[in-house]
Image 1 (tube, helix red, strand yellow):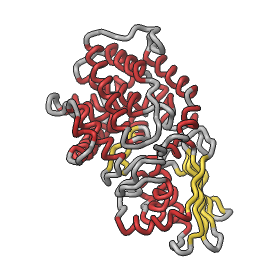
Image 2: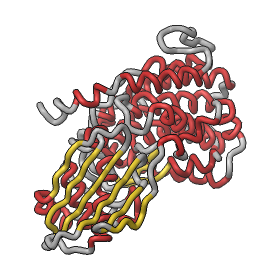
Image 3: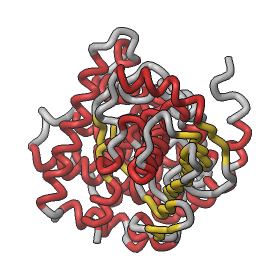
Image 4: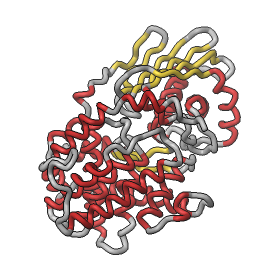
Length: 402
């Protein structure tokens, strides 16, 4: 079961996954509409507020521009729907030039849905329509309707997702799995490390990248990767729980130590970091007002680093507890380059907390939201995340406005 959850929640993607979900929806619509650019009348897109928020000012892969409309246009013109979250891997200047014209036919609005939601309606000039609905997960196409004919209908049930299944486990049981994982899972973790290191190394070579002033290797790799991704670099990132920034932030802090520990230890520590990140996201939801890279992935990284240093189970759980108890409240004000600094904040906390945990120095139970049992702390984080949701509405008044 944990293997299935892992493969469902760890996938490569080009670019920020929210505009990519939009591009996937329009690419799929084009596949079924089978219309040329000249025959397209309009595309109407309805999004949940978090998807909308994260698509406002983050660069689209392969470009130096941002906007949900341009993401939709690129998906329609040159997207490959069969590639899923890698739908825009073939973006080029010719496609971008055409997309700049097509975007004027695209209208985007917010839908008050409490989970990830992308509804795209493409209309041809002779009024044929294709409706594509993505729900619950960035690449989960739940419904396809051509004119009045529904050819796919898989209603989204929030309580029956693969992500929800991880709640059946405890942190101890997750550690048990990490100690004896499936070989194909460890092989994939190695691929994830290589993929995320590659974009980080690229970012380090870019003038003005946040990594240029990094104070240590942990910060250098994480800031380089996140900044490059948010800047539209056309390189894949291994996502974790729907987010590339989370993938970078829970994988790279451990990967930076790959020369100091044996390969299997690095892979298992990284796997623990990934699974802890997924576990917490199951309680908060994939898209939230809380910064996943800056807080939730940091808890995963703290667990992985503590494991890497030989920490016992209680120390690993204390590291998770103390990280989320410290960083909960770091908000998500949309995807953008500045996410790199939030990810670094989480990484620095993870490093410190891991050292404290190894030395049996911990935040006492009852301090703030920290409970005795780490699972209870995580449940509290899930509940409190819901109480901060007004932030998502209010912050939209400020994103993109100097």
